[in-house]
Image (cartoon, rainbow, N blue to C red; front, side, top):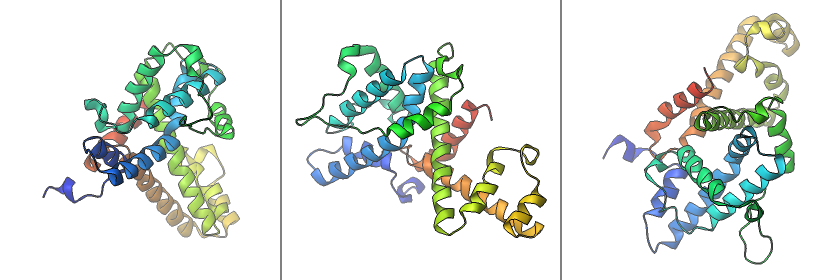
Length: 250
């Protein structure tokens, strides 16, 4: 058995496997649930991509709802092409195909009856829109694939940070996360000094250094975990993460 065979299945690999399996309703049921979870987590990346391509908020929301409703109505993912090894590549190809072949009047999601629905949190839309500068919302001069990869990377980072924050709050250390998390994405010169932070948290300089190290290590692992859910082969996780960091210019 290969190393890949001993690694646990990711949500995307479960979806792909179901697309290659006929007649097994239990496998398909688990795969559909996995696909729904992936869509729920990563729709902000697609929404942000459409906004950067010049779509209005309402138009982008309608397109995403219609696209995911169409995707979830499929009983399998067997139609995915060779790029399905990465959920990112599959969604990018599928979304562009959907947008190119749908008229505006067909984008709005039909409600009621047996139609599949995909809920988008309007509060989340506000959060995504606030992450853009005014110029970035019309960045349709850039390469589409690069724009999409950047939004995908930002979505993964937001997911990892959100999970970390929940963990710290559950341990009663929400203030720790609030004061230490800026160090994950900025230099010490961009904020309060370490001495000031240590004093506010009641830590020694050494204890603060250890706390920062642990936060960074956990953050890296959470980011790897997030990426791992979107590749068919878990061994591709590191390569995929580096590809996305390249899209961010890091």
